[in-house]
Image (tube, rainbow, N blue to C red; front, side):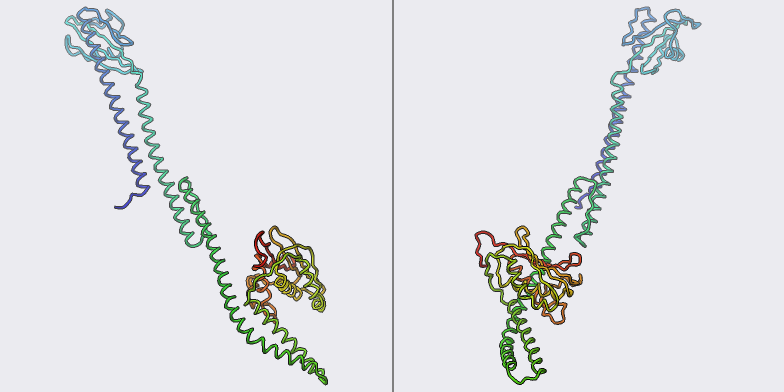
Length: 450
């Protein structure tokens, strides 16, 4: 059996309110009319009895709050007794049809009921009497009650219609909002005018916000899982490649070094051997980086000055940086529990990239500072940075903007930061390129070895 809609129910309520109002008005009208007829009949009976007593010569006592009037007219219409007949009595007199036949008349004047009776005797004299009855004091209240019932019924019907429209429009806007949310959780949710529906809309907004957050977390976890899977696959491949390549590289380096020590080499041959040795060293660094990615060894953390580590790495890189006419500056200091070897490798990678990106005659700044529960190392240079559309790829393995780079330096630096409970981020501040590496303190009571 289909369920009736809210509009149908409210329409039914409005119809019942109108029916009840109409029935009440009709009942009160009939009651009022019946009461008026009864009062009129009683007043006519009193006037008729009074005129008969007057005709027989007996004393007449008029009952009622206002009493009554009576009198006698001559056959010619002159007043013999009492006052001149009022309009109600004149009407009764004009309707006399026979001798000793009582004629009656009723007239409503200014809220008073005037009931008159008259008769003519065999001598032609006219006897008349009029009874005055006040309107009952509750009569205005009955009329007011009828008016209130009519207005309340009409107001109920109007309210039911307005409520039906408001609920219909609110339900429609909620339905449209849900349809939009099914396509995009960022879509706005309309707030209906009905409080109950507005509360539902607020719940829908909260649900959409929770879904957006859950979706964001899911996407983040999906990206992290994909990155972990790529790193795991890369680690397996790197371990195999490094194992197969490292021994031949060591043999090649040994033979080149022995050849360079020999006498009688021409300048061209010695230059070729130097270049060959440099390329072998570069390949060896690549193998070392690949092994670092594939072997996530436990951290050997101890509390030490990060500025001291940064200054040590800067001093080792200064001769190479001087060749490029770039200075390296270290500012600030903070103490944290870190693995010196891994952090030094990460700083090396960041500083090398900054020096290579800096214009000649400029400087690279390494800043160490405490940021709440984290310690931050920022490396700043005045290079052009990375295009916005490629910034998300910066920390992916093998991504590089250099023709000679391996694309593993930033990936290793990020892995080091995450291993220390921190992050590695990239941003532009004005004309500066900034890489920020953070490390977290080891919680009290935990082991320094992680």
